[in-house]
Length: 279
Length: 162
Image: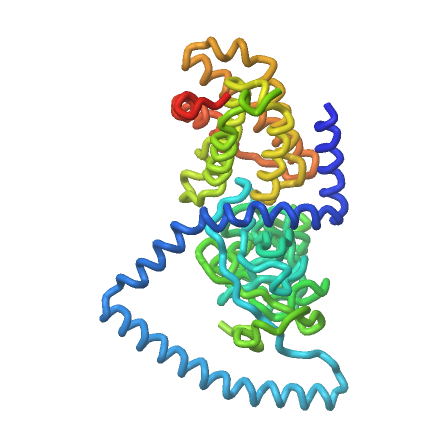
């Protein structure tokens, strides 16, 4: 009986406040070895796969990556010039918006969480400077944000979780909206846009940075379905996330410009300035 | 009570750890809804076999671990597993003498109860689930029970857990 009350109290507190995060973080240290263990066969198989792949395949991959690297480097050259120019212009306008954020690469643990929620576990925690609510991105777009933080690991909610919403902006027209997760692995819904809104299939949605949680200008989703029924006040709009939410193994933890990374500078080798990708 | 009466606690702990690991093991998408509730099965087995050792408190603690491991609301699985353990304790003398298939059915009902309580809690905090696939673990637990039962019984006799 007592336990029933204690759990009810725990649930109420956990749902409304977040001062139980420390307790959760503490217990997560106990659970982490197990998660690591469960992940081991998966990472081992990928390691074996890498080690057993043939020489030709490796050479081919190497050549491809080299080419890509050169390409990106060339683009980066131009980007640096553009960034400097942007900064100069902003100084002229006396605007203080900063470009560039700190990032750190984290790895996904192949661990299944509660069914019917879209959450992932990553192998970076508060010891690496991660913080609650920190945005996660992937090579192709925004992935989600950290909801539970432990010292060694963190649980992140993907943008497709039914409890998740992210402020976005239409890249083409600058229109602001909110992209809400549906719980389906590859669909976001954009509610509360009147049917007169100028939005068509194929429009890119980027994060708007409103709300201060996600850094602005990262791609989030591509509009896949627009239904404008004249009898309804709002259009029904669906979008497909650009990030490979179900497939990627690596994520980038982002420290937005206004939220510098705390603690040690051990990860200086991985710290770079990330830029919004332009697909 | 002397230490000699309690024996083989390691087996119990190990079985719970393995059950928790099976809960977290990544499965392909199609198989995920079919995952049996391993933790409930193991908990119910020990409640039936050793009601004086494993009970509501153990159920609550493992539930709390599962909450943290699965990112659920803190206390959600703790509550449901404690209730399942309580019922299993109340019914242990009856379930013990059932033939295996009747045991499976009663275990399925316990798993279904666990699922229903979870659904209620999720409903209260506004994360409703609207697919019938939600109830599949009850069926797969029914199929997995003989396996769990026979394995754990063998282990219990082998290592004289009491």
